[in-house]
Image (cartoon, rainbow, N blue to C red; front, side, top):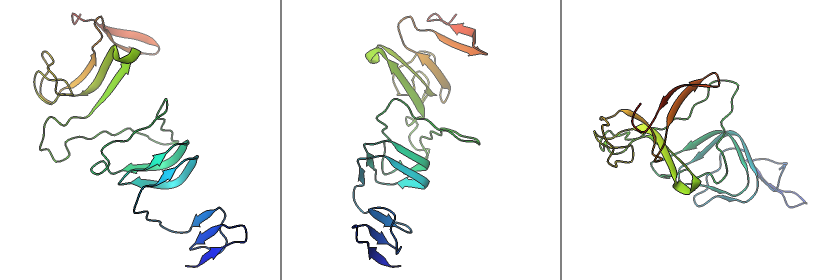
Length: 171
């Protein structure tokens, strides 16, 4: 495809009339760091196998992170929001090689500077929490919902009302 430079300094790769400072028509491979310091919008797929740094807001229709290479997805904001007119999910998969049972999927929660900790996740062994720390009476590969605050309660509710409360003495 053509390479073009407009009089205003816009560079087009694979396109004759670039619509922005850099306009690439087709697939682009960047073999180094991609650093974006402004807002970004992706209307197709965004795939990161080595990581990306974005300091503005990012809107991505489909985000794929190759965790085998990246290891961490860090969002420095107050929320991760997934919206769709169809089904949507948050999928956490650990121990994909089924080799290390201490590799578990879990969501860790914390507030008040770490004073109120909790998590939802699978246990790697009997007597362990999802982070492989000692935890009384857990069973291998069980789903554990925990509030580890000293007087912590776990409550389940529906229709804006609590239906079940479990206190620290398991009542």
